[in-house]
Image (cartoon, rainbow, N blue to C red):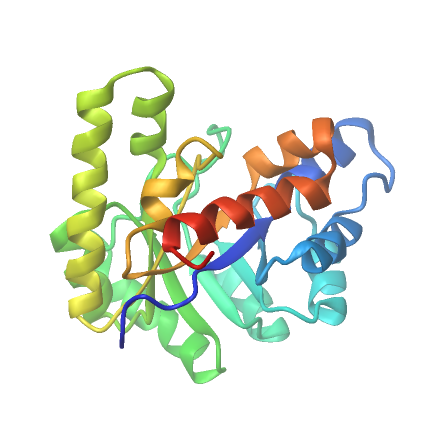
Length: 251
């Protein structure tokens, strides 16, 4: 692998479904949002089918799998039910995430060390089906080593602590979190893993993460859907793309 490659943007559309489900009915349509994101320059679409179906539904996944022309990144818990759904649709990528019913959004990285043997068995059929397996993980050396041992091809580094520290003005903590992300991106890259990052990224926080040369993809959702209320989804995504490219030195 080489560094300095073009940085991809995956747009997470979960919270379009959150708004739809707050009222019921079919609007706003996550598939329409996905197609608009494609047109705005998204390199992929991320959707998390939660066990409680609080936002994305099974029908949404069916529609996305049938209609997208960019890759679908299917976020899911490591359960038999979700594995069966992934094997039926065979998305381009499967990202394993921790999931707690009481949380508002995914709160931390998956504890691969604690479940290493089970997760190794779990991802084997997904890889055999042609899915790229990613694990949403903390920027922690032992967890990254465990992800590599079980056969994950990709890790997505959790940027939430970095973003929270920035938003709350804890600048020394923010800088320490960024340094950890920088070091662990390089470490994971050295193990032969493809490095992605995401969670909580905004226009104000994306630049330093996008500038890390080992990172190949950022997955951003909640902020973009919120920003779309004020400026529209297309310009919201295009501005994020511009900031990513500028940080990467592509423009």
